[in-house]
Image 1 (cartoon, rainbow, N blue to C red):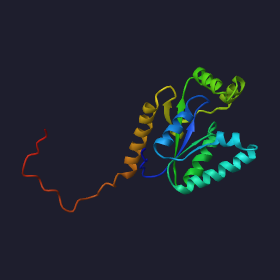
Image 2 (cartoon, rainbow, N blue to C red):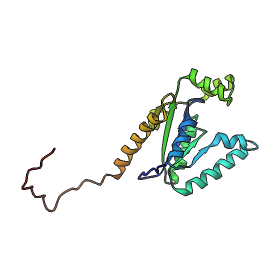
Image 3 (cartoon, one colour):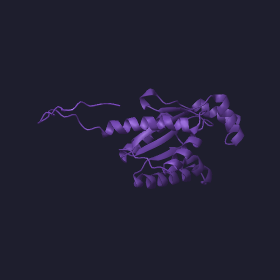
Image 4 (cartoon, rainbow, N blue to C red):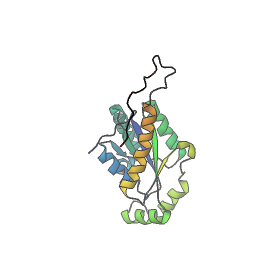
Length: 190
């Protein structure tokens, strides 16, 4: 197992239609990097009602935020308004918000959803009707729900490493007090 060393902790929100592969990626990513993973759908299923679920999710998210480490959140990401609220919440607690959008064609997603029994066909189509794909301004990382975890992971880690390097780069120097001395021996590259 590895740890994720980022200049700033990230609040990762999973986005995608049911059956796209959000849970698969989120669970494996969280396990690999020892990151907390909050699946609001599991909490909602265990809670007495939606009001209780909302309170439980708030409590859990508050406790996760106290840890100050990168975490993964799945749920309530179907609209831009909810994603914006999550971003605002994350930034106010010192996290860099990040959307990971798992894309899979509707036929495959429906087949997976019916197979796991999470929704029926009508509920799936209702979700599709209400789903708002991330806007380019949200700068979501897009991964395919049909690719292997390793290829999905490469895309996400490539983005995170570029972002990490950019935030860790030192400020350019305006001037140098002593110019560097030229070397007296030639440099040989083999």
